[in-house]
Length: 272
Length: 272
Image (cartoon, rainbow over all chains, first blue to last red):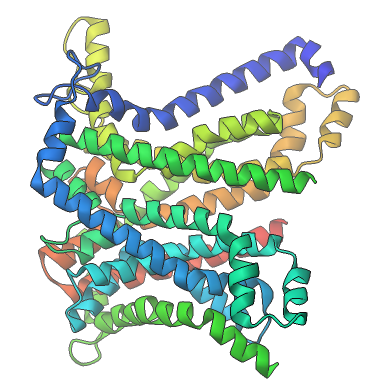
């Protein structure tokens, strides 16, 4: 390392490389950060930097029944999706890591399929299929769709947590006569709590931000925040969207810090 | 064996049932809708193959996906190099600059780009101020806007596999080359670049496959000529209510995605 630092040519290359990287970081961050100053500008026109600073857009957002209805709908869908996906993903992730049985690979492929299949195709399929049961436009239908969409990410996160568990603890508990339920409640779930929390946060954000499934599966009364945003960007670019975007970016920042913290603990464990 | 099989079903059963009911069946229903009207017919497919609209959107989809993947690789590579050079603690910090955009809603980004690239947007008004007269560069509702938006979305997906590949390179190789007097450019082109090929292949195939199904960005940042296959699915489902055509496009998209994913896995296996 020190050698190359003294070499002027190497230093020049490194300098250029760092410069290029910093430009790309700026390009990546610009859209997420730009919405913040715009959201504190005036409600009449989108301007950067805003001539007058105000919180009028937020007042307008929180005072608008239709935006509030969409926000409420998104929160309901995201919370229900998170709970349902944890309910099916925790045991599935445990089975994925701990058990071996014929056909397991095929089952894993099925459970991970939502990552590989274009969401638009799933959305079309569910749109047609739900109409057979009258589920199109219903909150319940969207929660089911979102649960399948987010579960692979939840399973991967929790399976990583299960891999770190010491199987001898489970063996010892069983040896000492713990029932399956006691094993689950006293041994497994407490140890898995951090990865369940991380998986749950991912599920919450993925569902809260998801637009394609929601665009196909919601009706006028069940439209979520992303659906309302999508149609208002398409038809009339209202400055209120900047306030909504800032709230979404804040939520992303929280989840991103949690993800970074999880990676950090994994890194520490890897170093041990 | 039998016991583990029942146990496997106990743990993974709920997730499997949900995936079958909410993913496999709807996809099967798309296939069914594309082939039966009400008797078996290939009409939907033959109609599409002779349709100018479909031909154009297929071409657009492929062109945009490959362009976006290539541009993302070019932008992501310097970032991955920069991250790979950092000590672990600093790398975690810089990673946040990639993770925040990764977790930011695609709607927030699309909205921000309408503000940045628009007629009276950030760039145009800045250029006008510098030059001293009104400048209106067309940067949105055209191919350029779509590529900028998609690249911004895809770069984080490029950085992660590239970084993993770069970190796997034995640093001793570089040191050895340096001691033997290789210049930085030589080291890059004969060690770093060739050894990062698996990462490049992985990043390129993932981002191309992801782009093929893009819906929101072409709809919000593209013009009428930038309709991709996903937008055509939406058009046929909701505007013309031609569900047979929509299903046929969905199946074609699905087949393209699956074929490319399998081919990429094969290439990666050969390259590794």
